[in-house]
Length: 251
Image (tube, rainbow, N blue to C red; front, side, top):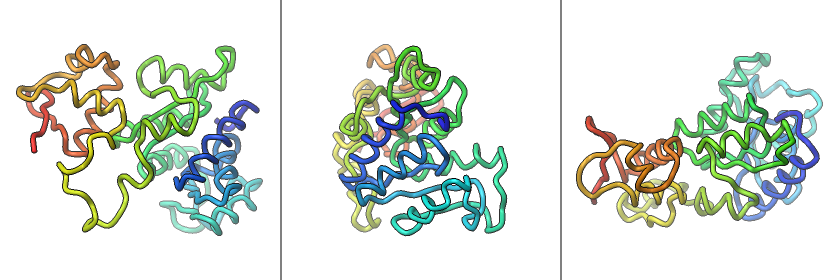
C-alpha cells in the first residue's frame, strides 16, 4: 500500500533488510509507502534491489523518489517494459505488477487494503506459480484488511519475519544459476519446495488423477492454496494437469 502505517514501514524494513543481508534481491515498484520502505531497507544494508517502473526508465516516478531511484540504479537496477519517454498511466501500474511477480521467487505482502495493487500483484504471482505470503496486522487497520483477506481465503501464507518468508519460498538462489549447472529435474531436493507445495505433493496419489478439492481434503490445505501449489508443482515438473484431473509425475 502507498498509505503505509508506521507498523507497515517497520515490518517492511525488518523483513526486506534481513532478506537483503542474506543475499536476496528485493524487487518492488518504487512507489510511496511499502515499496519505498522495501527499497530503502535493502539499500541501507548494502543489498541489491530492483525497481520496476510503470513508465520509461528516464522518468523518475514518483518525483519524490528521484534520489531513491538514482541509488537503486547504482546498487541494483531500474527496469521497465516501456520505452524511454513513456509517461505513467493507471493501467500501466496494474500491468507492471505482473513483472514484479514474475521477476521474483515469491511475493511478500506487508500491508494491503481490501482492494489494492498489492493484491493484484499477489494474483499475478499465483498465476505464474510464485508463492505468496502476507503479514498480519491489527484487526482494526484498514491497511491490513487485504492481507487478512488473503490469509483467510487461502491466497497467502501467514508470515511474521524473514525466516518465515524463506521457509515458504525456499533457500536463496535455489532457482538460479546457469542451465548447465542446474540439477536434473528429478534430482532436485524435495525440501527446496515451499511448504504448501510439498504438502500438496504428498497428498497427490502415486496413481490416478484427482481434483484440487480432493487434494484439499487429504492435505488439509484450502482449495485456493492447493490450486496455487499445483501450478508450482507443474512448473517444477512434479505434477501435471490431465483430462481427468491432476496427476503426480514419476521420475
